[in-house]
Amino acid sequence: MSNYEKTNNSNKKTFKERLKIIGPGAVITASFIGVGTITTATQAGASFGYAILWAVVLSIIATIVLQEIVVRIGIVTQEGLGEAIREQFASPLLKFCSVWLVAIAITVGSAAYIAGDLTGTSLGVTTLVDIPVHKVAPFIGVIVFLFGISGNYKLIENVMIFLIAILSIVFITTMIVVQPDIGEVFKGGFIPTIPDGSIITIIAVIGTTVVPYNFFIHASSVSEKWSHPHQIREARWDTIISITVGGLITAAIVITAAATMKGVDVKSGADLAIQLEPLLGSWARTFISIGLFAAGISSAMASPLGAAYTLSSVFRWEKGIKDKRFKIVFTIVILFGIISSAIGLEPLTLLLFAQALNGIILPVIAVLIMIVANNKKRLGQYANTLKINIIGGIVSVIVAGLGIYSLIDAVKGFMQF
Image (cartoon, rainbow, N blue to C red; front, side):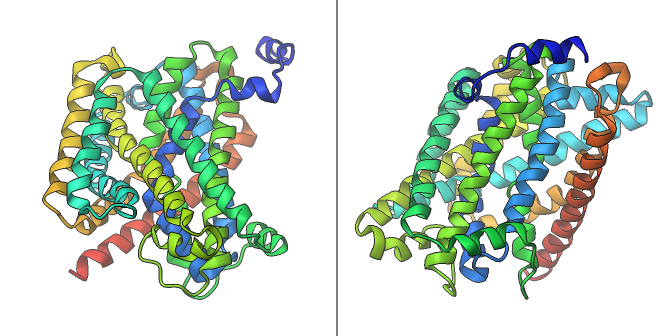
């Protein structure tokens, strides 16, 4: 047994103590539980009942596996993922190609997503108040900008944790109120089936959870919270607990929609409120509006953070979130979202473009993560074990398939314009 394992075994923490270490993992969860996830999960439940709940389970397992590997890289090297990728290759050509492919794809993808994030967040307000979305979205963008430009990582982390708490209360409570069929829930969650016409929805459920820029946010944020390899166990628990909670929130939305909306044509996550009115009365719209707003603002904050953290790590900006260049990137991305949402720009084209970029970059980053995680010269005893390589390899193949399918689907979408 290594000294690392002895130290951790002699300092085992209670579950309550482990909750206190929650931080960077919650930021990742808040990032992927956005309005897009709520809408996709609602569509999954309304269209296919409980049958594809297993896709939520699979997406959470895949996310935990990849994010745990990224966490180890971040803590052991005390660098961002971009720096680790940059240092992996001795060849100047490979170094140049990997750095710029990652930098351009993640940054442009984040900018493409931000307009949809702000518009989606506005649904939480406009569901209750009769104000046009294009007037609410820029105001929300300003709120996100003020948080991001503060340069205070702890503030952002605490906001994300608070938003996750709200999402948990709203959607898990709602699931309990609708009293779903428990037997069908377990059957759908652990017995994979692919109903006719469900493959695109399954891909979407997984794709809204495994998000490329979250790898860069996570690697950089854990190095701000933990500075020694013996703290990897704490970071691992943060990752497992936080992402599992995110999975429960997504599953709760699918289950609620399956119990109350089977066969309903879903346009957005706000449609869930209409179906819950017989159970929750006037509180239905309030509940769902709060959930949509919390989900949207957390995801909107993550998009510019993802771009800024990615560029910060690949180009070695030593001050991280406090660096002026970090703030400039954050500002440019959020301003793009504010302007495009204010003029009512149709986000579908941008989202298809972002989807195409993710389709290219997701398989590449999954492979790069596995390569970096096997570098024993840099990670030593914390490099991947054979077991992790097998599990990570399987997950990477699934993620690669997801990325390729997303790229093909996006190209088809462009051809329809």
